[in-house]
Length: 257
Image (cartoon, rainbow, N blue to C red):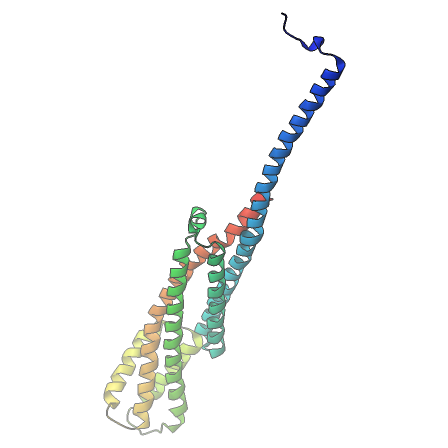
């Protein structure tokens, strides 16, 4: 018995076989497209629910972080309490945005870590910076209050009081340093204030009060320079992490195209 070839089939069977093949190919293509669409739907949902919001929150982190740092720098230059309050307010907004950013990824921190974003380090740096900022503002406010008290008491200083000339000169030098921002004299002025404080200690005079406030100002101000340097260091470290976080959502959106 000879095998049946394509030529041996009648026209009806040939047409049936053709339609069957087309149907089979259609089913296979439909299944493949369905799977692709299902996967794409999952990716789109992840994009809409995670990556787009994460890009938004990351931009808020960077924006509020810059605001807080800029206001802190302004306060350092102007000693205006408004700038201090704005620095703290912006820091709070940045912390809220950081919390929202981390929540979007849930427990899947490895996904972020693979993209160069260490959320644990971000939280640690943010907490350290907040503590340092609060410490800096507190010390600076104490110093500013001491200087304001010294200035308020200045009119009560009278020629002929003990160490009158030295105190007036010291107060003038401190005010000039504060206005010009030339803080290289801080150490020298602090030494002068300590000497005057020792000479006027035990006295209830205006001179002793002015010297005590100047000494307090210079001492706090000198300590705060170390805190300010720490704040600058943490600011630079945190900025790199923030930039990495802000790139995550945007990079994924570009890939999805």
